[in-house]
Length: 124
Image (cartoon, rainbow, N blue to C red):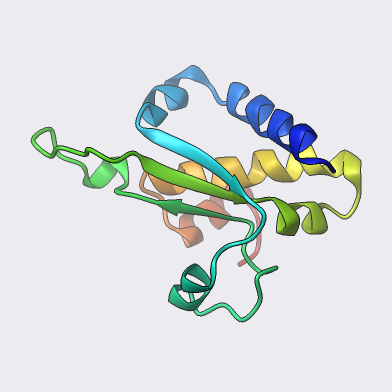
C-alpha cells in the first residue's frame, strides 16, 4: 500500500471515531512512521521492529489535572509497515488501522492493555 492510500485510511479511521471521543483528542497528534525507532523498541523491550503497530505517548486524560499545562501534544504513532504486514491483505489494512487507532486512543483515555483486550475480546 502506498503512503497516500495509508494516510487516507488513517484519516478515515479518525473520522469514524465518535464525536464524544474526538473531543478528547484535541491535543493529540497522530504520526505515521514506517517503523518504531531503536530507542522505542529498546524502551519497550521489543526485539523486532515488526512487533509494534502503534504507540501512545503522553499523559492519559485520567491523569491530567485542570491545573496542569500541557504545552506539547500527546502523540499516537502508527507504524505503517508493521500494520500492512499484520493485515496480510490490502483490503484488511483499513480495519487494522482503525483497530490500532482505537487501541491507542484507549490508552489516551486511561485504559491499560489488559483492560483494552478485555473490552475488545483480543488476546494479549
